[in-house]
Amino acid sequence: MKVVILAGGMGTRISEESRYKPKPMVEIGDRPILWHIMKWYASFGFQEFVICCGYKGHMIKDYFLNYDTYQGDGVYELGRAEDRADRIKAEESGTEENRRERWKVTLANTGRLTKTAGRLLRIRDYLDEKPFMLTYGDGVADVDLNELLECHRKGGRLATVTTTQPEGRFGSMQMEPDGRVMSFREKARRDQSWVNIGFMVMEPGIFSYLGDGSQMLEDEPFERLAAAGQMDAYRHEGFWAPMDTLRDKEELERLWALDQAPWKR
Image 1 (cartoon, rainbow, N blue to C red):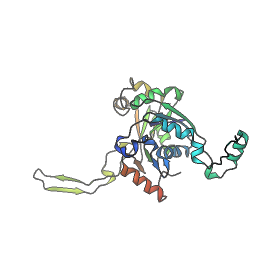
Image 2: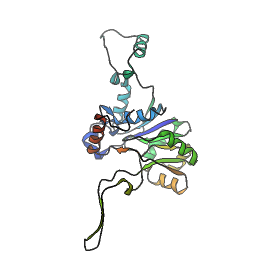
Image 3: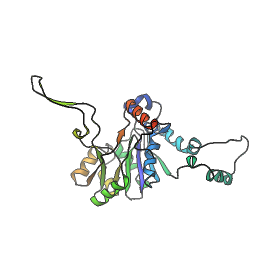
Image 4: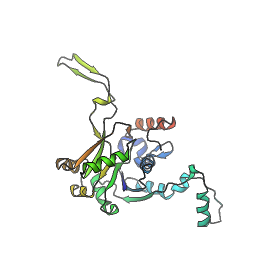
């Protein structure tokens, strides 16, 4: 099953970073968050990816074009071309840490300003009319992908989205019209609404709900799927963190540096 990653947005809420690079290329521990997401999927056996590029998409293409160089050690003897057999032998004898991921990555130029529904439509031919995974290129989680897939298959619907209750950031209170506080509750996860966090499974039939691709996937396309009874929810009660702001990035960096990142594989 292929994994589609939406990686074309401009990331305006983290403009300190995204003015220089596409949001999925913002780094956590010297690796793009896109890499972290792909590593999580690969740990469950998903090795084929279709990445929907857009804003500054050439930087994502450059990263994968030079992936072996970026990830491993390099010895360069200028003026002498290393033949293919020697290169393969050197790679196979390398340490486990320096072995390259065996991923097949399709980098699709889906347009700089294209909405998410349109990005999906543009990569349809790469999916071979088969079910596929779909997620966003700016959030990490410890979602059990085997359980997610089982939930999707049991539900028998066209789409399954992973939902969670995010960590509360603010306390809540109830007040009388005169301002008197009737109750106060500290921030708590169980008080939050369930939200879509990506990590979705889709059947080919969802393409008939995308219209002409001029809308965000999460607007009318998802509303139509839900109204038709064709959307399931997989409830995730573990870790999830989007990287919407610089503060979010710094927190993810902190977890990674302390070796406490729940998504680490």
